[in-house]
Image 1 (cartoon, rainbow, N blue to C red):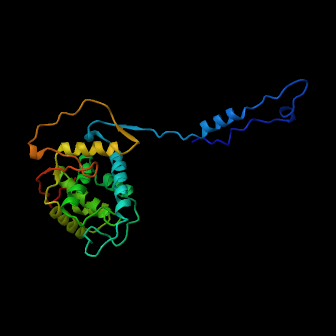
Image 2: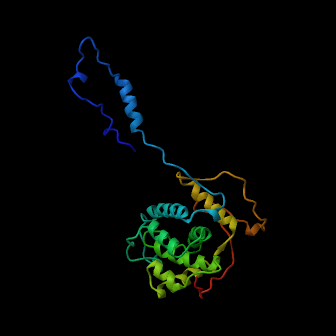
Image 3: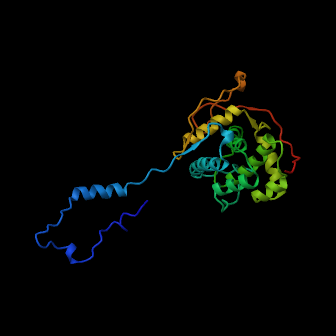
Amino acid sequence: MPSTLVGSKRNITGPSNLLATDGEKLQSIDPDNRAESLSKRLRPEKPAVKVLPCRYEEANPRDLVVLISSMLMELIRFNDQIPLRDGRLTRFHSRSPPRISVHDYLQRLTTHATLSPPILLSMVYYIDRLCALYPAFTVSSLTVHRFLISSATVASKGLSDSFWTNKTYARVGGISIAELALLELEFLWRVEWRIVPQPEVLEDYYQRLVERCDEYVIQPGKDIDAQPTEKDETAATSSIMRNGGSTSATDATATTTASTK
């Protein structure tokens, strides 16, 4: 925002600007007009709104990182206020919150593990599924980083034809290969090996993420025709994004043997 003080003063070159001579009159300054002018300059500018594509597959992963990390931080601020009870520790808990921020960590995973939009949105879907099937788990400052590396690894193997080895995911995530293997197995067991959400589910998560953020809007366009599905396979609304509802996913088993890009 431009400064309201620097550069707003009138140039005063000498006493002739201060005193009226030879019949000249000083122009009076209306206090009301001056106050109105200052208020306009002090008024904060509205942040620019970025338009995102209708299809989540075409979204820039960096924008999704911003949307997802913002949602995660909202959950963390709420859940960190809940006292941790005995017996509620999970394999995803750290001794203390890692120093790297949620946004920077997720961006690191996205960049170095080449996470695509479907993978990123599936990681959000896993929050709902994991919390529903594993009540001891909550997204907090102690669990979010291990959850992200676990879900990124599982989603990459479940949704991509090619993916990195566990050695690469562990190096990018900052944990050992042995720990990642334990986290991956724990994750798959807790979500009952159902790791591939329907496209309609990902579309719904994408829309809800954008709707909750004032800095983004989805480009207006024709609705995407959804393929007809059975009633029990129809994607419902995310419990994170709105109240009620559930999500469904197709069965899939994540292989533990990874192929190297």
